[in-house]
Length: 216
Image 1 (cartoon, rainbow, N blue to C red):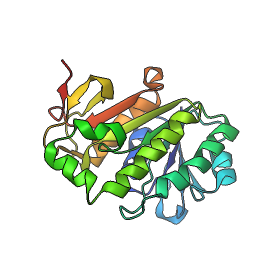
Image 2: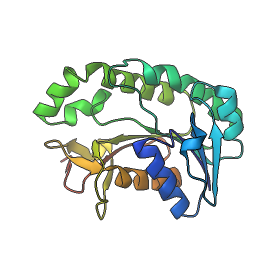
Image 3: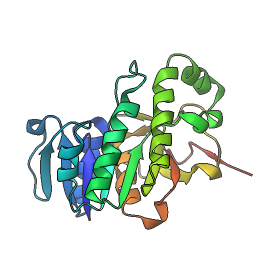
Image 4: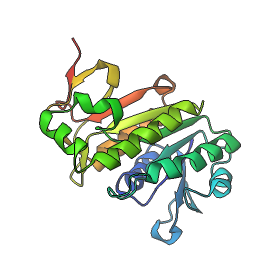
């Protein structure tokens, strides 16, 4: 497949590029600083900002999926709401089949599934950040595009775990404590989701194998 990664120099995006190339896909890294991306076989680097719909549509021409792995400052309560409409327009113009959005666990209706301590953080110091994520998620759902929205738990730079859990939100009762997951595990899950037709229209939690409990 041909996969476009928006935010390909970030913690999640850069590892998503690695995972997609390792899986044999053709990858377009859409970034503001193309000089920051190492040239590799199977990789095309396209320069542009997420707000530049025309540049993104050109970069995404012929792509099967776009993975949106950008995030603003936690102090910016409107970053994703500003960025996503241009991405949606570009995807429509390029007729891309699937959009995979990296949201965050704690946004919108995922917050009640969190532990009490996590909910306190989401309602206070991270309130604006998660409200922005939830609003952007709603924009994508309303767009009419073929989408998948993912909700990774707390992320960290650490050695890859043998596996991660990817679960539809409807099957998740709780996410106990504050599970943390390596960036690479999320990246691997994103690539698998992008090529899986069964993930169309899904909202998926990405967490550690023990970092969730099922609904009754």
